[in-house]
Length: 128
Image 1 (tube, rainbow, N blue to C red):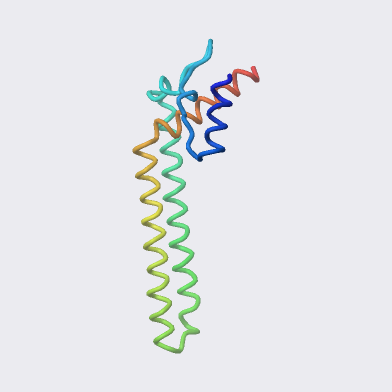
Image 2: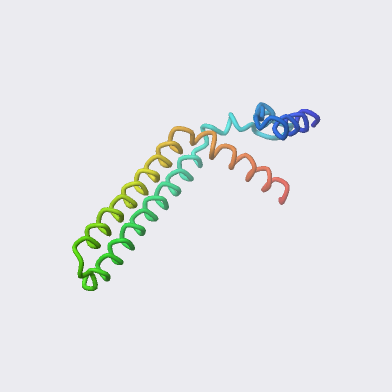
């Protein structure tokens, strides 16, 4: 238990944390590394990817709707061009950010979701 406090102290003082203690299993527990092959990881990643894509489609639909509603009220071509360019850039950067997030999660999903599943299983063991 003292290794946890030493790691937390190191993190508070330096900002760097040694995460080796996370992968240690206590009696009756499964370590995070053993859960890397857990099929629930792919299921959780699939749900997160689907929600991210759905959110991106929602944002694109919202921007398109707002532009369509504003179109009859735009009398100046300069304002129209500014809205098209700025809205297009926002949508492009938003799509790139979502794509990067999904890509990062797919590369590191065993660690990200394995850690979540480890603590969810611990919580479920304590409940029942």
